[in-house]
Length: 137
Image (tube, rainbow, N blue to C red):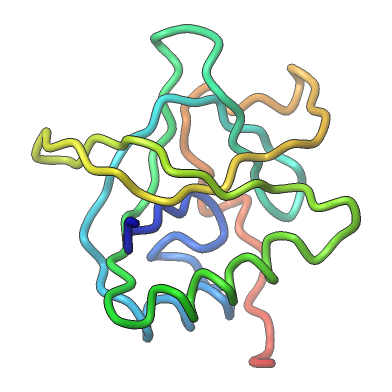
């Protein structure tokens, strides 16, 4: 089972989000990576859907969860699926690291409905979409 996690939105390394800071403190940042998929702006956060063609790529950050993998993934599952029905499904997927290596990682696929107006063609959830800092829980 993989102990790597790809994040592509409010949990990316440069995010000011409280959960992103907690992830950065408990895991090792491996580097940037791309995954075949389509990214949608859902307002305060993005959603990753499977690609429609071979040209759809999304940029994210890979973290090595190490010995804390089970605990961190459990915490991420609760965070990503706080709503009912759960909007995200965690699955293993292949990403390509900046140096060209492929790696199997956990990723959260969005299972809700989206419209093409929400599609982020650049494949990156930009900082201007990032919500303001949240207080620590």
